[in-house]
Image 1: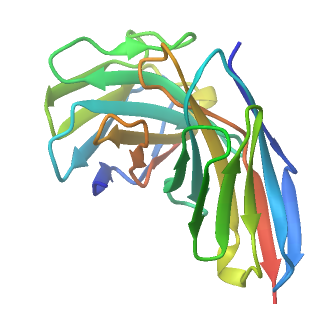
Image 2: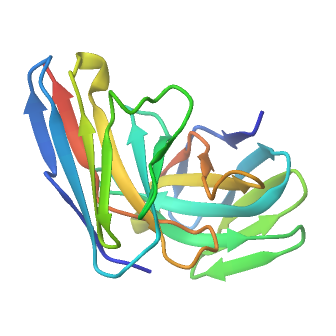
Length: 111
Length: 114
């Protein structure tokens, strides 16, 4: 069964304290792995797509990487405005373009 | 990307009634999706709604409970029928504009059933 597991469930950082979020996945075949940011009361906001192991994408303080079994979202020198829930999703082969989401990591960055 | 709006943004409904949620996109898209996000949980796909074909429902979701319409390439509705408190959730629509898998989401409809 296709599955996505994110860790930790919650993470508290001080402003400027870099860290990484993990997304482990089990899927019959990976067509893509996606990272989203979700603020309270809003829909998820698309961040990155990764397609193959070794691929990396960057945007401001965020960098996403992909291996054959997991993806990391690295946050460098975070700011309070980076506080949000970060969701990982996979698109399996034969899945009719569906996305399977993990439970997310709630990130709180304190000044 | 795409700009997506949903109506209503929130509603409080009585059990046994039905609510229709609208999703409007600012461009023509083939693939639209409806998700449910229960309190404190992640997103679960309810169904895929492609224009010109019947909606495809995921395991655990049935058409009688969640009928979907897709009359054109910019609009879709999801109805939550015969509601119970367990249907209290956020309902989100999304679109895949390029067929590459990345989906763009609407702001969601927060439903409370009393």
